[in-house]
Image 1 (cartoon, rainbow, N blue to C red):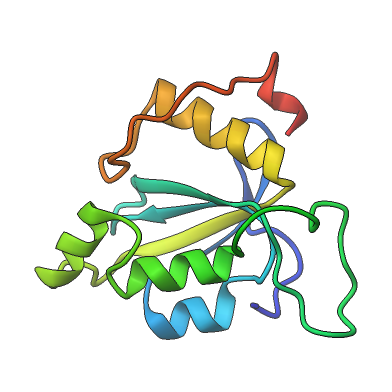
Image 2 (image 1 turned 120 degrees about the vertical axis):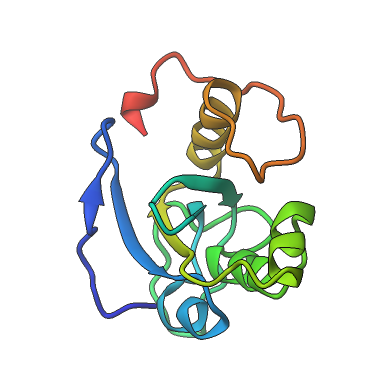
Amino acid sequence: MSKKSVPSFTDHWFRGWYGPFPFTDEGVKMHAPSKSGVYQVRDRSGAVLYIGISTKSQLKAGEERGEWETEGSSSIQSRLKRHVTGRGNKTLAQLRTLGRLDGMTFVYHLCDGESARQIESFVTVNNKPSCNDKTERAMLPHSIMVH
């Protein structure tokens, strides 16, 4: 994970996001955490192309476990590794095949799996990014400000 321990920016709901980092194999290895949360793949202009979630951390022996690191299937890093190599999302895979990943970046927000699902649901229901292929079911909280 990046040596930066403070989020780079906050969104309009005051959530702290890390990045942007290069959406490349090396960029993911260096900067994506082995923790749970929400991540976005963005184009050169910063527009969100894809939003995804991770509901589980993959910590190494001896690393301290955070409150959100208890459930799920894969880390932010493992999910982004799949996407950058052309797996896990059909549209991102097509962009990779066409050589159109140059200049793309990713950002992430650390949170628990439940919050990640609700944030992703809110975004895909209200302003679905172009590379999110699946129809997501709404899991909206009463207010996403708490996340």
